[in-house]
Length: 377
Image (cartoon, rainbow, N blue to C red; front, side, top):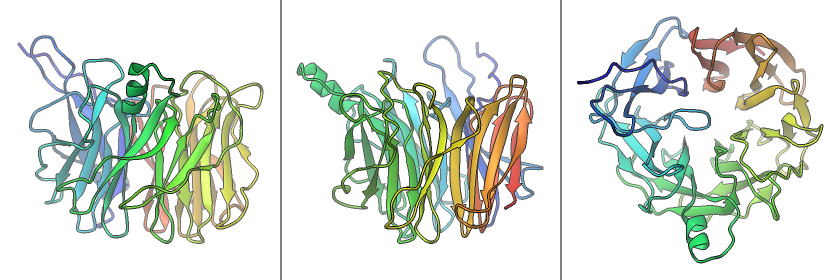
């Protein structure tokens, strides 16, 4: 006999389509009979009234399968230039900390989705997880993920290897096929998602938590071309956090219209740990890092829309979890900060989406559901 599906999982992604509708994607446990790995489906919903009401779409998967939807891992949602709906997710495998990167698309606005395909070409039972997706200005799909194949091979050969690697693949035909697996860098943190954004010139940039020798977990950045090898990595945080573990706390990066790079990241260690923000002008030197919130600030995101910059993060005050937003109408100056949402139950990480020249917060909580806030600068 089947069992009743449990309540929705909180790991949610969001995006705005060409009609200005807000879409969200999340996993829900699927009915299943007997034992075996937990099966899920991916459900979409859209709203045209800033989250006051929702129209449910899906489920996406004709055949439910395991879907990672917690912490740094969740189904990801993006739109093509002609309204194509793209979804990526990680399918966990039976062996712990392993998975495949999966992709599905809809060419009719979300009514029908293709059968999911595995993106990465390495089909060994290894860690291919924590997917990120971005669409460039020409409609090409970039999918990046954390990959343990090289570490597995090194250890099998008796050689040392720090952490995991970061890979990506590109589709130039609207997701009908993907190019080869391309390694961005060796020695990245094992469970911190990578961040992707576009520069004003249309370049795709990745930022991730790197493991600098011997075991310093600071952040790096690289440009990802649509073909060929990525550019050299650039170190972009200098906290010298030495920890032999993964903090499950990926960074966020955004480029404004002038090409300045805004970044948010988490760092621990000593009394200097916390959540930080900095801005680096195009072609200039990195700005001084400023702390965001108090010692319990976590899971920050940054987004640029025209002249507007927004930074959000979660922070527990002893009673409630609040989402704090810092907004600026001019990059890096005239900041306004306020609490924009709160909950006394469990919650997802806060996420930012661009709506034209505006920036919205989307935050899923167990008690309030999907909270949407337009952030005023």
